[in-house]
Length: 83
Image 1 (cartoon, rainbow, N blue to C red):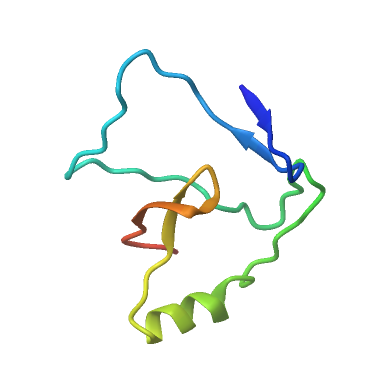
Image 2: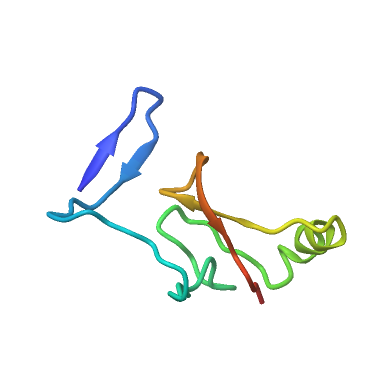
């Protein structure tokens, strides 16, 4: 399902008939970006695009936040490993 906010941003969500719970010990993995592939918005991410910002976070002892529906106001965890 898609919902458009007043700001015009698209919010994607799924409806579940039961409560969704995240428990310790569960693994979430996937691709944040595919290098060299054109996405639906016409963007192409080049290999190495994130290297400087990821190093900066690591050097500062910070982690990349896992966000609910790409919303920075709704962090639901942090990524343990990015490569």
